[in-house]
Length: 92
View 1 (cartoon, rainbow, N blue to C red):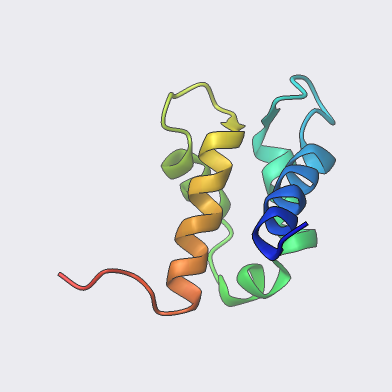
View 2 (view 1 turned 90 degrees about the vertical axis):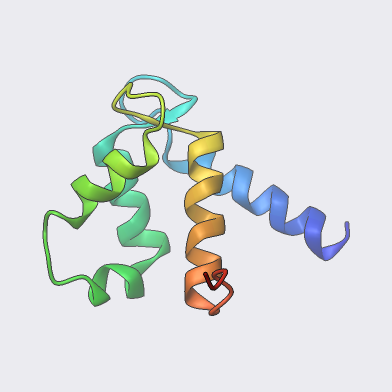
C-alpha cells in the first residue's frame, strides 16, 4: 500500500478500535471519544488545562446533533488537528 492508503487504513482501524464499546459500532460516544483522545492523542490532552474541553470538542464535532461522533465527523477532527498542529490553517 502507498503511504496515503496506509494512513487511511490506520484511521479506519483506530476509529473501529474505540467505536462501539458502548452501543453503536459505527459511532463514538462521548466516553469513547475521551478514551480515544487519552490513548491516541495524549499530548493534546496534556496541553488542555480545562476538563470541559472534551465536552466542547464533542459538541463541535457532532454536526448532526445525535450526541455521537460518526466516522465523517471523526475525519474532520483528524484533518483539523493535522492543520492546527502543523500550522496549515488557512490565513484570513
